Amino acid sequence: MSSSQATLRSLYRSLLRELPPRPGQPRSLLHKHLRESFSSQAAAGQHQNPRAATDHADQFVRYLQAQRQYVTLIERYNPGMGMDEEERTRLTARRVGMDLPVEYSVDDVEGEKK
Image (cartoon, rainbow, N blue to C red):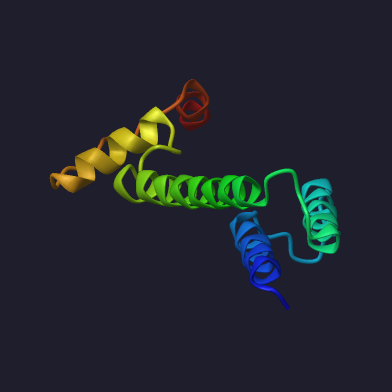
């Protein structure tokens, strides 16, 4: 196996690692496209500019890794991002040692009168 084929295989595996996992599901169209593209390059062994193609793929892998790390950091340092306003307010109050009063709806008050 030549060095360029080893490099292509390494880049291909790196790209697959960065794709979201899909356990129990068939391969995505993107996965199939990547496989065809890399296998055709490896089989042909020649590309218009093989160094540029591998550099481009390597840059794309690094971009995907940076995006994954960015999302991880956003989720870690902004834990209330996916919460609604009421839940965020309640947790903020709990952080400083307060409990918010229980809010009653109109249905709760009418049910107590009967």
